[in-house]
Image (cartoon, rainbow, N blue to C red; front, side, top):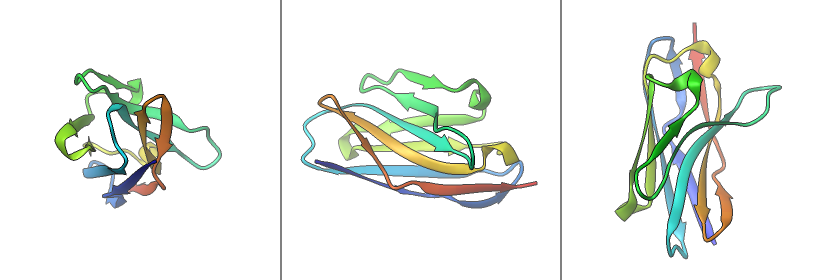
Length: 115
């Protein structure tokens, strides 16, 4: 089993920045892709950004140029640096890890951007 614990959410004004962290623990052999998803009220969960074990990244169009995903494989930790935040970025952000073919999820962290 793999446990994911997120941190770093909060309330910020539009134009501000936040940095999310997600640390994986447990019986970890090799985590492939790690990523961040978000879910706003009344909307489906959507991919924000993902990073493979080789460092390849993928971003949602809505966050390109503003968000940066990074990863410390030695610490099994993934980060999401969010700059130029907009009110539409308000959502619960979930960490995801793909480990030996299974998906694992964190409990979520709230990000609220005020206008």
